[in-house]
Length: 105
Image 1 (cartoon, rainbow, N blue to C red):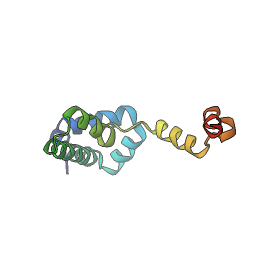
Image 2: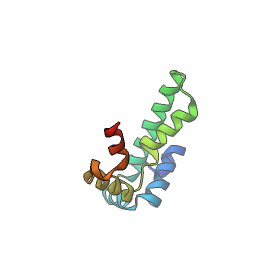
Image 3: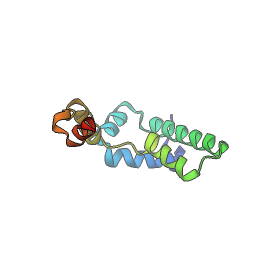
Image 4: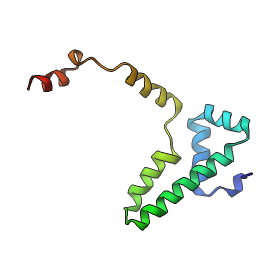
């Protein structure tokens, strides 16, 4: 079982982010006893990605941003819900002036 002291920078970043921005997910992981395992797993994924990116000469800051967005700093739950609601109710073409203009050209 992973302890908080086993987490490095990325794992601690995930833990802090869960507590502050994803409290429901944090509560579920805490209840199941999987918080530290989850944080360590995300830390490992991000670290492996950064290592592989460096081997392929990818700019470190670019790779770090990708790792943060993919494994470390996920949007809060309300953002996820808002995005899915927007996708479920797309703006009709006739109500979207830019789409109408493109269609006419």
